[in-house]
Amino acid sequence: MTRTEKRLTRKKGWGLEGYDTFKEEFYPLDGRFSSEESARNAARERLKKLEKTQPTESTGGQDGVQDRVYIIRPDGSKYRFLK
Image (cartoon, rainbow, N blue to C red; front, side, top):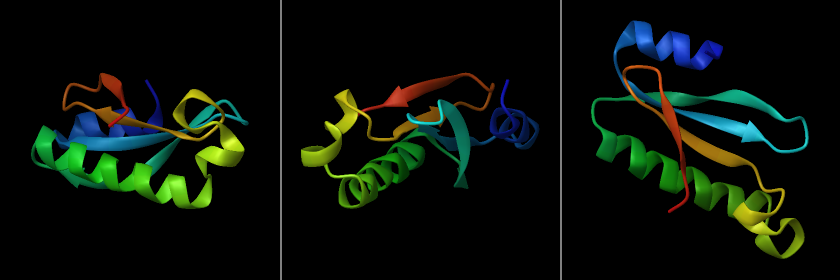
């Protein structure tokens, strides 16, 4: 379990975590959410920001080397958010 997962499990909320494809490591993203819907909306916004800073044309997008976004459930498990 990563630091972000441990922190969110203690706080019992939904959260986000990024994944750096070059470093091959997870990193925390700000925000704690009361619902999955809120976390999904924040993840969607994060993907929009990634598209501006790491455009699909040069990174291959989510199928390439663009950073990834994960949603962390209150139980600490997570899943990759794509859209």
